Length: 207
Image (cartoon, rainbow, N blue to C red; front, top):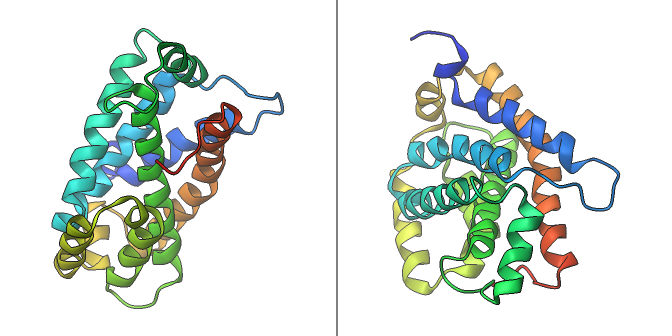
C-alpha cells in the first residue's frame, strides 16, 4: 500500500475536523460555519462506518444519505446557521428529509465515532465489541426502536478486530492512536457547535 494521505482516511478526517474546530472555537457568539466545509469533513467519516461491517450498515446508509443531502444543500445555502434558519421559516424543521433534521442525524454519527475512538483508546485487547457496544448504547440506542437495537446487537459479533480495522485504514497501532486522539480533540468543539446551534433556536436535541 502507498503511504500518501489519500490512502489514510484517518488523516483526512483529522485534518478536516481540525479546520472545523478552529471555526467552532471562535469567540463570537455564533460563528458561521460553512455548510460545505462541514459536509465535506463529515463525508470523510463515511468510510469508518463502512469498515465496521454489518453492525453499523444501517448507520452507514443513513449517515451517507444525510451527508449527501447537506452537501447538495450547501451549494445554495452557505452556512449551517442559515440552513437551520431557513427550515425554521418554512416550518419544516422536524419533517423527514429537512436539512435541519439531517444535520442532527449527522451530528449523532460524528458523536458515535468520537465515543468509539475514546473507547478504543482505553480498551485493551484486539476486540472492538466493547468499544462499539458502548458507543452505540450512548449515542444511537436511545433513538432506536427494539428491532434495530436487537439487529445491531447481533451484528456486534461480526465486527472486525482492532487489527483488521487498522489494516483497512492503513495505520499501525501508534499512528492510529495519534489520529484517533486528534479526532476526539477536534470533533468535540464541532459537536458542541451544532448542539449550541440547535439549543439557541430552542429546537432541542432529542428527536
